[in-house]
Amino acid sequence: MSDTVLYETDGPVATVTLNRPDRLNAMNKELIATMIETLDRAASDEAIRVLILTGSGRGFCAGGDLAGFADGEFKDEMPIEAKIADLRRSMRTSQILRESELVTIAAINGACAGAGMSWALACDLRYAAEGAKFSTAFLNAGLSGDFGGTYTLTQIVGTAKARELYLLSERFDALEAERLGIVTKAMPADELLPQVRNIAQRLADSAPIALRRIKQNLNDATRLSMAEALDREADRHSRCGTTQDNTEAAKAFLEKRKPVFQGR
Image (cartoon, rainbow, N blue to C red):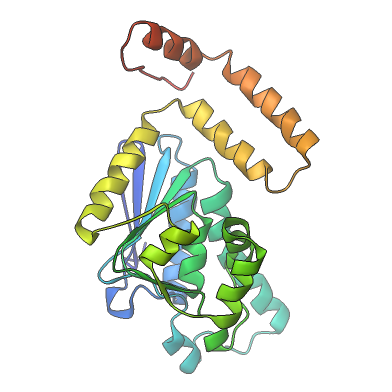
């Protein structure tokens, strides 16, 4: 695999690092292709429960590499239908971040714009360094937006604010992102990865089956009627109640100790 995306694991926690620091980790075809392979690898590994997405150097991901548009990398002569299909395959990365059984956390260390912001928005949780800057950026590049940002941002901040952020395309900082609920917390840069890794480990130590079912419930809440969501909740909750992990949690509570979950 290309070194434009780095992949490392620490027990049940995987860290994916975008690695084009000289371009603020902007997307080119090589990075996108490697990201697809990397996320597929993580999502298919039953030992991985939590995935951290971050960037190397000063940027998280500045979106599509405009140098690629200028020099024609993204403007080959394939028919428009083929371009649409190719982009849709690439955009599956956002679907994996949002819909896979992994809990995904964006550690936003710097510039976060365009499709890079879309990747961050697709994650379950987001934390940012205080110096990080955000922008939807698409309109300024003469583009309408991809990688699911209009979908996820609308759900996070609401219709009116999402329209403002996309149509005006202004930059905002990590503290504003925290105020809007786009990130859970802004923190000093040197604390970002240590704190995110602690959160990831805490999640990885929790009951694996329940963790996956909670994420499924939350995803269902965005697309099902309440009656359908209640049906799914009842099914998953009842099944979790039959697990050894549920029995272990109850015993640990009564014995005033930390539970040891086995995913059974």
